[in-house]
Image 1 (cartoon, rainbow, N blue to C red):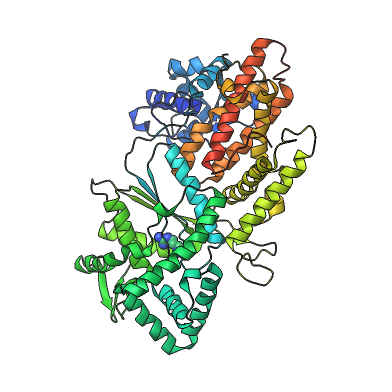
Image 2 (cartoon, rainbow, N blue to C red):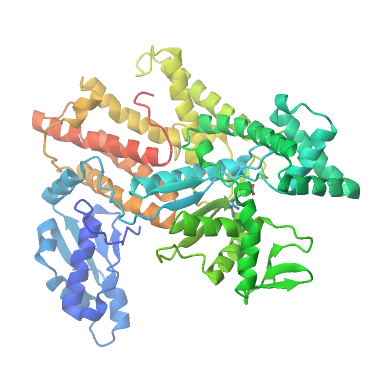
Length: 601
Ligand code: ARG
């Protein structure tokens, strides 16, 4: 398994960062300055018999530098040039096999690293860049139910935001609502025609009006024309129409906020900056593109062409209307040049890949990927796959309609509550006898944790099956399994009669003796590197895998190393301290996934 190769400044508690630095120095000393940028290729070893890490760099180097000796000789040369720092932390340091370097860390070094990690930061390094990062998430459309795709965007975007914030970055969560354009005008016209009372509007009415309006516009030229007229009126700020438009938005957003609330995501009205926000900036976008010679007229439309693809990006239609892409260009410009973001992350369905490719390339052409202070901004589309039903087709209800988000969440919570309630019946369960309201709260955390973990734990572009039975199970790679692992660590402290504050005050050195403790220590020390990896790659599944591995290392430790019944008080204290660190890393890591970690389950 590859481990983090990003060397960071003060990574006192990340052995890989320290090994990286030492090995780079050794390579330069042995082979010359021109190799300063080489990646030592440090990998975690699965079989502890050989050590903790394996360094693979000599194999590649031998190929690159003919005449420099075979990989074993090169590895030996690098080892001979290693700074004393390496000897200080490793008790095994040897050339093995065809030319690896195997390294095992000294147990005292592990103790020192854990000590350094044991702060509120838990080994997570903070980035120093002060530019904000913008995350485009949710993107629900007004007058429609929030669907599963918006659920994924919200969950993934919220988790990425938490990870980046944890790394010390300022994050702007941008909810790019679909609240402008012809579809909205069509619905407005439909509602007015039917004389629907907009003050008593329900989302279902809106949904229905949306479908009816769409059908009419498809079959009836006059209806389409009328909708276009309505749009022009709306664009010209017709007061009555604008008032109705707000009612539509309010009705949609009420339901969206209810879902946010069920989901416990950090998202609210303050994050709304929808398509309508950019409406006055659209003519300026087209203007800028035409003036700089990047866009051209083509049969009355204004388009941007790219050298490497047939399809152009249309930024103004021949009837003068603007498009989804025009708004996105205005948004790039705003986010980078006005908000100053040096990374703009679009968490949007993978099927919009071509759209974002065109928008990003157009933005690069015109130079809107530079902040005012000259930093280059990265524009990234984090695409995700579809959520499938048991039949492996996109999720539908029995009557064939798109499943609404709320139904899914309510169902997930009900399953969580049922599971937690059932477990609480066992007289030995830590939840036995808890009041109903506590069980409800724990059940909600379990149900939502299950949905979020399932959403985040695979490669994001993969489609996945929405299978509540599997997601809510306490066994396997699930959110509830990790929540339960955390609650089990907490229960040790409850049994020992130490409250959670007491847990933090345990005064003992870390003492890493047994193989299971060694493995657990290595797992803990990876945390900061994993969070850095997720911040860089924007792949939350790395954190999911990590937490699962940590829980696994903990469960082996728990079987092999008695804590409360340890042989002597010093061992007991040292192990309690290790447990406390595990508990905090699990809770922190789950928190970055947006998952609550109840103390009792
Ligand atoms: N409203 C769009 C949809 O439902 C998603 C918006 C994504 N964000 C963006 N900047 N285009 O497909």
